[in-house]
Image 1 (cartoon, rainbow over the protein chains, first blue to last red):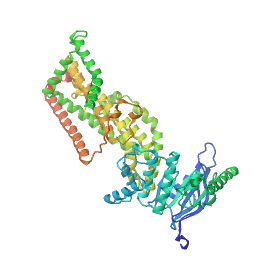
Image 2: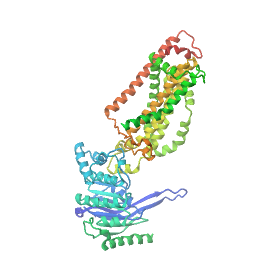
Image 3: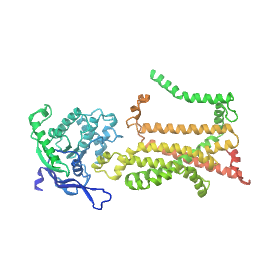
Image 4: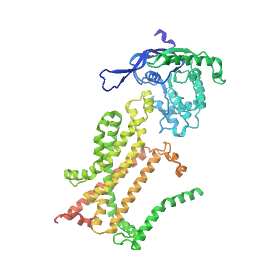
Amino acid sequence: MTSTNTTKIEIKGVGRTFPLKTSGSSAAREFTALNDVNLSIQKGEFLAIVGPSGCGKSSLLDILAGLSPASSGEVLIDGVTVTRPALDRGIVLQGDSLLAWRTVRKNVEFGLEAKKVPKAERRDISDRYIKLVGLSGFEDHFPHELSGGMKQRVALARALAYDPEILLLDEPFAAVDALTRENLQNELLRIWNTTGKTIIFVTHSIEEATYLADRVAVLTTNPGTIRQVVDIDLPRPRSGGDIRSTPEFGRFRHTLWQLLHSGEAHA
Amino acid sequence: MPERQNALTSLLLRSSGIIFFLILWEASSRLRWIDPYFLPRFSVVVAEIGRLIQDGSLISNLAISSARAIGGLLIACLVGLPLGFIFGRWFPTAAEALDPLLRIMSQVNPFLVLMASTLILGFGETTKFLVIAWVSVWPLLFYTITAVRSVDPLLIKTARSMGISESGLLQQILIPASLPTIFTGLRISAGITFFILVAVEMLNASSGLGYFEHNSAMNFEIAGMYAAATVIVLLGFLLNRFLIALERSLFAWRAPADFLLGSVHTDKKRVLWRPGRFATATAAVMILLLLISGSFEIQRVNSERASMLSGENPGKHARHLGSEVGK
């Protein structure tokens, strides 16, 4: 309990295996998605997890969210083992996770209803977060009337609205075009700055990880395990200038690239 | 102003086929292309409908038929919807195992069911409700299972990440996400219900629109026969239109499909309608009233017939002689 002053999340020896269905063979076979993942994340830190597809990134996020159990090891949040989902963690998933039958406002209020926040208060909060993600004026629109980028903003506002301490983002900007993605990245950094949340951001883009994160955990595939954690010592704020073109950015980018590719060579 | 003119032109365009058909009907009888005894003029049939409304027999049979249709559909909903959710959400393996059986059962010709259930349950109302429910339950069941199983896992994951319970998930995600597909099943069920109702009433009833139609034919009341047929067709059409309109306004939150097809009707602004408690209660009371008034009407007609036939020796086709009751 002494070391939890600044440590928010502690991932201790987490593994995840899935039983494989093989007809004809009597031996029970398993697929190891994650093996012995150890990581501790500080309060207010922005951590990115990069890795090739199939490295167990999403499995790790599911375990952090409490949506699926770890086969071995455990995840501690503020020193307490995670056993189930709760509103202290907000989640934004890849793709369109909005409730199509609810307006933007009612989508943002969805978690607040689960939290049993009174109606008048819900309205104030949703107003605030819709404004925060820059969607004022779209409160009464339905998701099908929004662009892909706007939908992801709503999903972000929904996760922020019930005020979780941790944000778990699973490739949230993967499905939007490059220009929109850059805007959303800057918005996320701004929101992180104003709210001070602890963020775990899963992506397959090295550049995105470098641009956003304080630290980048590189996962290698088969079995998924952490190869190395890289500190990104780039100055903040990173938006504004074209930081992506600086040699420092290129160096970090290259380090990550090498880690990812040497990992593949071993497999 | 040009907007209204457009609407009028569109209406005229869309009803031109119907108008042409009615003119053809009227002409073929007037010009004796078809013997007017077997095909009375459309105007004569319309007049007959008016007469049947005035003497009350059309309203009486309409009430009876509606009660049977609503009763059968309600039974189908009460069985099909919960079963669909249970199979689709909690027992997908059972649904898969039972699928061949259910598919075969759904293919059983309703007339075979009618024969069997008439033998077992007799000529009473139970048989009619059962056959109608049997026919209409399958689309409801299959569409519900499909709807529940195709709810986007992303939505379920998102809701679960907020610590929502299984019952909360059902109310907040599964039901609203499946409703549009279930409603399509309901629309198909309602159509089939209407079809089979008329057939059942022809074979196995002494009241209702199907009976009236059949009885008029048996008694060579040809205008009455066409009048009943016209009313049946009109009713089926209106029911279908009503359900489509309801579907459009209930699920206006969906991306319009006709937009993708480049249809000419995209300019219609679809207005979302969320029925509140009052609207839902009103609808429920209206359905219940239809059901109750129809049931009373069935009882009244049956007891009248019983008192008319008492003393007589009910022969093979006695029910056809009872047509006087309807008048």
